[in-house]
Length: 322
Length: 309
Image (cartoon, rainbow over all chains, first blue to last red; front, side, top):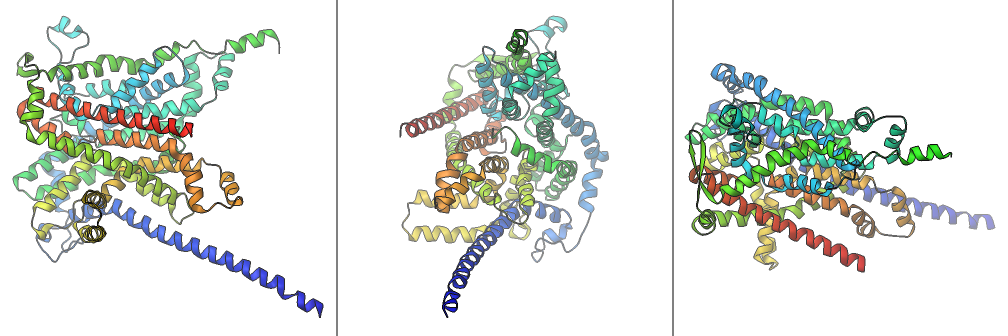
């Protein structure tokens, strides 16, 4: 008799605890569902311009004036792509291969190395004036790019270093519309948002323990051997982040391209010229601009798909957080 | 440890001047390219620039360009004001939004890696010529008749209803018009906010992941609610990273040449020459620097007050 009386008590307790557990699980599940739907909506916000652009470029012109056509084309066509590609003897493809691609590669390689170098220098050494260098890096970031565009142009239109060229040839050299301005800018950490790269590397090298370079020195490595043989291979994931960001930013760049390469058929200049010609009331040019923009993105998308995991984990792990 | 090894370890620090050699690329670039460019642009703003075959000539005009910018050109002050106020308004919104999304992505949700990749897309693809294209597309969609308004632009006009409802709701609650305007403009620019917070989301996410789980366990044992955990643990721990996010947001906005003011300065430069353009830019720079100075001072005082308390 006594036993029977005792039995229900623990059993009841268990169900209550289970109930609490279930209700907690239900609550968490509900919250997660709501958040998931929210994220889906925000992802849609990011992706829908691309969907509209892609579908819009496959629409025949009469679909654009047909009010019954929503976002899905009635008459599918490749005409816009063909027209964009074949315009002016394939200038789009020639431009990508002779200007955009080599420029992006050169800028990305050079700024990766220069920013790593400078970031290492200010992170690992305490030289007098280091604070000034850091302040100067911040200054290059804080000056709005629009405010230096006119002097950027005249700097390279009448290029001269300390009057050397003027002494030799009698006049400053004109190096805009060549690759040299971008080479100079990216080799000196002045390309687009290069200061951010310097700080990414700065924070990363700050987090590397001092014992490592001490051990290298005890083993007889000089400062440069330490840098090239130990630090550089170690920071591979950050280098990938910097490389791909500066590659992508140079690829789609309009600021430097417009002021330094005004007439060259680069990717962004071609798209911009289509955009500007829409003002003349030629509506096809809107579609051509979108088609050209989308086609030029394909290499970037391929790069992003390949490196996506490494870029994201690299930024997450990158010393920015340190 | 023998004396020799000790000595060797003591000497194991490099000469600190080696750091200068590593920083040389930037130092040269700054001194030879960037600083002259700044000085040049500053001197442009006090001159009228006349372009001839052998280069350009400067005709000194003293403060005339600044006078033109502030008193004659009626559009400039207005667009400067709207640019700066939109920057002040959107920076905290973007920072908090990225923290919010990072907190969500830090939960165990299905497909969170895919979401992370999607939110990062605008960082790679949303700068430069593409943002120019987007603004042109929405412009064209606005200008053309309803028939070709198929939403090629990034702002879809169908948002209007929801935002209108929110506005009406806030009006019925007797909120001031400034607050209503702020809320509706932020709701309208959700596309911009999402597109501008890619890097910040990742930075906040990394900060959240660097908080040790044992801290949360301890809080749970002590009986803290989720609300308390967020405000007493998560938020203070990610606060330093929020400062980085604010900084990055400001920089990203400054270097975005598709914004209204840079475009306006470019137009004025094309019409009225480099001199006036440089004056406009320097007024812009001065305002931005003053704003950042105020923000830094505020942050400094907040930290100081907190330390005292």
